[in-house]
Structure formats: structure tokens, C-alpha cells
Image (tube, rainbow, N blue to C red; front, top):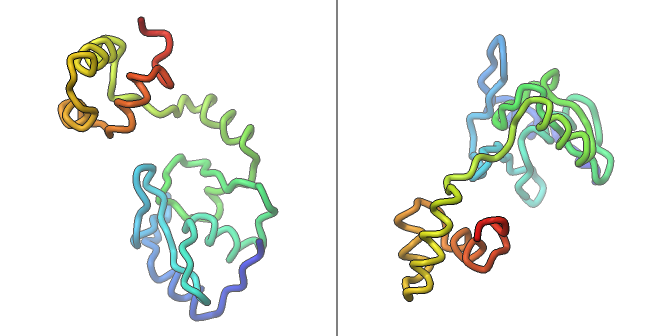
Length: 151
């Protein structure tokens, strides 16, 4: 989808960026858990990822289904020269080459403990609080949606 940016949108966007010799960091709202910047674009003020807005302002429309990836691996970076277009496979290959993978907070040993605690009747909420993860993460581990290889 192509978005038109008014001069006011462009000025407001770049006014929320800290320019530096390296990454140009988005200083506005950040979407957790991955830390990408978000920009409220008018009209309608809908939320968009800041790095995608930077690409469109600088380079034009992003084709449907195409990712805007970071060469620098900094999700807050909106510097156009640090961005490139790719598909899902390109993004995963880039992550593998750079050894950028999500790291889990849980270990295989934790999973055995979690499953035993659920079997004793403790709730996902109680267990999640102790391990610093979400109740959904606990549910997935207990129901073997994740950590299938742990007995």
C-alpha cells in the first residue's frame, strides 16, 4: 500500500529522529517487545513502523509483502542507508549470517520444572511470574507447542 506524506508529516517524522554518524535513532514511541519505532501517520493517524516510513519518504513505495530490513540490526534505526528491501527468506538469511536469533529466557531444565509445577496444580500466571515470562509462554511449553524435544 502506498502512503502519501505531507510536508508536515515529513517534518514531524524527521524531527523525531536523532541524527548521528552511525544509526539515526527513532526517539518517538517504541513498539515492544522487538523495539521498533512507530510513527502515527496522518490522515487517520494510523500507526506505522518508523523504519518503513523512513524508506518510503526517501525511496518511495514499498511493494506489497516486502520487508524493510536493517543492515545495522538496530530496530530503532531509520537511517535510509542502513535499510534494505527483502522478503521473509532474505530477512531470515540475514539473521542467520549475523547470528541474530531470539534468545530464550528458559532452559531445558526449566521446562521440566515448569511442567512438574503445572502437574501439581500451579497456574500459568504463578509460574510465569517466577520465570519472568508470559503465561502464554508457560502454556505453550506445558502443552508442548514449544520445547517438544524436552521429555
